[in-house]
Image (cartoon, rainbow over all chains, first blue to last red; front, side, top):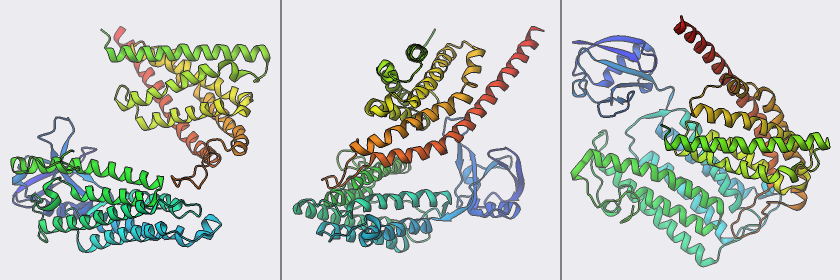
Length: 300
Length: 225
C-alpha cells in the first residue's frame, strides 16, 4: 500500500492523500477521490507532468483503465487533479445536435406562409433536398444509437450549447434559402449529379462507420488499424465521403449558404483528420501503412 | 541590436502615428476655420481610408504571432472601423454630418496616442505620460467614438434603403439574398453589447497600468536607497 498525494492542477492546493495499492486502476482511485470531493468520477481528470512535451506546464491525463504502476506512479508521486465541470454523455449531445436539423429544416419547407409571407409550389430540387437533408440526420441519429461505440463516456456540458447552436443555426441558414419562394432551381442534370454524389457519400459513410464499429469489440478500448475498402487510401474516409455528400447537396440545391456550410464542415473535419492520422502514426509507428493519406486519396 | 521583427513593428507604428497626426491636424484646422462639419470628408477622407485600411495589417500581425493580442479581438476592432470608413466613402449623407467629424476626431486622437505608445514600448522606452493618456483618454473618447460610429451608421440608413446599396435580392443563381440595411441595423445592436464590455475591459487595463507604475516607482526608490 502507498499513499498517493493528489493536488489541484490549477491552485496546487492539496485535495488529499489516498492510501491505495499500485495495481489499482486510475478509475478506482477516482472513486476514492469522488467520495471525498463529492464530485462524480466522470468530471475528475487526473494527470502527471508530461515527460514527452517540452512545454513547462504540460500534463498528461491518465486513462481510467490504466493501473498506477504502468504510468510510473510511485509512492512519492503527486497526481494533478482537475474538475472538468458538469458532464453530459456523448450520445445525448449527438442526438440533440441532430434532432435540431430534423426539426428546423422542414419548418421553412412547410411553413412558407409564416416565414416568407407567400407560398409557391415546391420544385423538384427543393423536394429532393428536403428528403436528403432529413435522411442524413435520421441516419446520424440511427448511427449514434446503434452503430458508434464511444471510447469517452462524457464531454463538458458547454459543448451541448456550442454544438447545438452550430447545427441548428446552420440548418436555418441553409433551409431559409433553399425553401425560399424565389428559389432558382439548377438545371436538371446538375440536380441528378448532386443527388448521385450525395447517395454515394452517404452509403460509403455508413460503410465506414460500420467498419470502425467492427474494429473495436464491445466493451473493449483496444485500438487497431482500420483496414479495407476506402481505409486503404486515407486515414479518415468517413470524413472524405461526408464532405462528398455535402458537395453533392450543394450542387443539387445550388445554394451559397450550403456551400459555406460544406466548407466550414470540411475545414473542421480536416483538423480532426490530421489529428487522427497523427495519432495512428504515433500509435502504430512502422505498422501503419505509409502510403495512406489523411483525407484525399493519393494527394493529402 | 533591434530585431527585424521589432524594426518592422516600430516602422509600422511610426507610420501610423504620422498618418493619424496629419489627419488630426487637417481635421482640427478645418473645424476651427469653418466651424462646421461640412467638407470634412472631402478634406481628410482619402487619408482616413489609407491609414484605416492599412490597419488590416494588424489582424495579420496577430495571426502570424508578431504581436500577442488575439486575432479575433483585433479582427472585431479593425472590422468595425473599416466598415464605418466604407460607409463614409460610399454614402454621401454621412460625409458632411456632425457624427462623422465626431467619429474621426475621437479616432485620430486615440490613434496618435496609441500608435506612439506602441512604438515607444517596443523600443523599451517607458513614457508615463503617453501610457497614462493611452489608459485614460478612452474614458471620454470611447463613448464619443461609438456615438460617432453609430451616428454615421444611422445617417446612412435611409440612403442605403433607397438606393439598395450593397443589397442582393432573390431570385439569383446563388440562391442568396443580402439586405445591407438590415445588417446595419443589427450592427447597432452589437455596439450596445460591445461598448460596456470593452469599456470595463479597458478600465481593468487602466487599473493594471497604474498599479504597475506605482510598484515600479517604489522599487526604484528602494534601489537608490
